[in-house]
Image 1: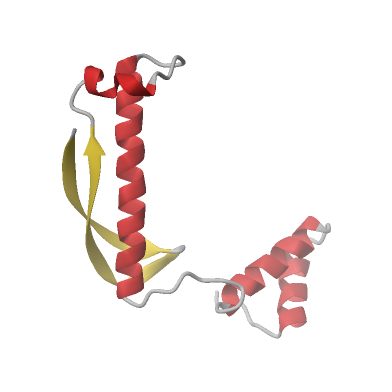
Image 2: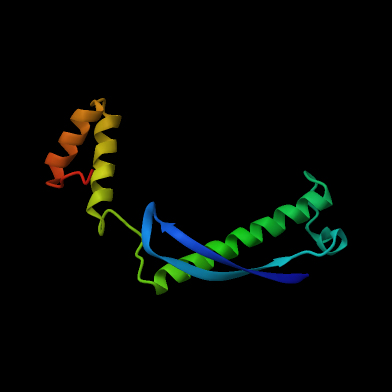
Length: 120
């Protein structure tokens, strides 16, 4: 097994453009041969398919972990309903839509209920 390292650049996070791009590096283990991977014994796929799947899975997990660390280091906070009024407004809007209000009425009702104006 070997380890591959790549660099990436985050331009958006949590649905919003970042004020500056954040560069980060991530690493993941890669199986170099089918024999090396045979221990997983996943009968639903061929050994080569299993190996490629696990390699891709490891890469995605590593990338996401390092992106989270880079965003934390840059002070980019994941928006929640507690810390982001616009997210709170969108969630309230969704509740009104789910209860049968039209788009326009749901926007007005959500804004009035929370005392938050839409940014657009």
